[in-house]
Length: 75
Image (cartoon, rainbow, N blue to C red; front, side, top):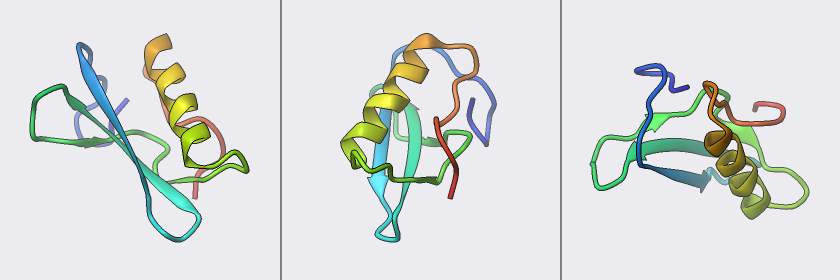
């Protein structure tokens, strides 16, 4: 589920970026496209496992479908 356009489906790329303040921005884009869309729940606090752990959790949520959001508490 994106902030700008709602649910998007298809081949997607997930981008998880450390914002430098303990939170991460998470966006998705159609693979090969230029436009990025902010995933609902972003920005999110980076968990104790770090940015990689957050990215893996987001990937799991997106793969599961169902209007995925960034898991965990938001920042």
